[in-house]
Length: 364
Image 1 (cartoon, rainbow, N blue to C red):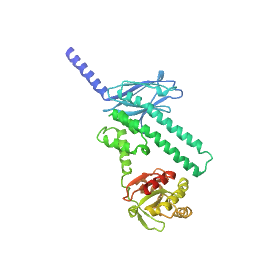
Image 2 (tube, one colour):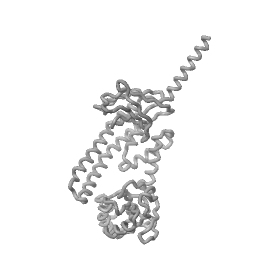
Image 3 (tube, rainbow, N blue to C red):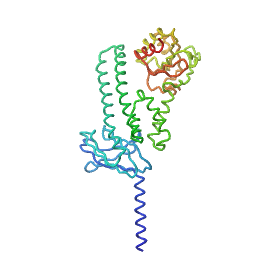
Image 4 (cartoon, rainbow, N blue to C red):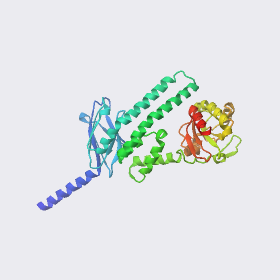
């Protein structure tokens, strides 16, 4: 009987150990939480769970898992990246008076993320500083002056964020794991398109069951289809006279595919610049294809005449329901793609001085 009981206890102990190896676990406490009553847990944009702070402002979160999971611990307005590995309970402590000095214990991967955090905080500081400076500099300025300042600030923004891109890529090269993935996932596609695509190709067959990583790969795949150097998707649409026009009809020329609309104020403000560039370079192999997101033919045609847009204009008058919005991943207008004579993408979203400089360097 004693032998039977002993074997039973061993079996139960083994089962408990197995169960713990299939569970991700984080616990800890939040000092000086103020009005914060809840700690939330996200995987990407998906909220997994929330737990109330108990006595002593303690919390605990457990979930079944078969592999490491990259999550965000959200406390008020603060978000902390963590990697929870089955069988490795993570201890987490944060003080809301100094949230950047949070402490973690029990996970080497989460410790690596904490080491990366200062780079990310510096990037966010640069972004906020430049946005604030731009807003202050553009007070009481004309549309033309604002556009000129926008170019200057965007140039500085790209230059400073390129430093962060190098830091994230270097960190990912040193951390061939979810910590490295997290660093790359924080990059801005407008600044680091090439790096994001290259990394997605590198991890194509890794982290295959991780939802967050799968989302990243899907977005990178979409980004790759419209990356610099890729052939631009075909456009088949209609002029105001209902004539069918294809983008491929313009092969042999440099083409600015300009997405705009009569109701879009920034688009209308940019039109004089495009008119100027068109007139300067139209005899050097450059043209424009205007693609409108209007749904009112009258407003569309009046805007073409008022802004003196002499180049080919097309629209299916479906506005944001147009298939082209999906094909070209248009999230806001004005948006543009500059194509080479073979129909491949040379550059994207060039406006104001940026468009003028690119055409000068390319066509002269």
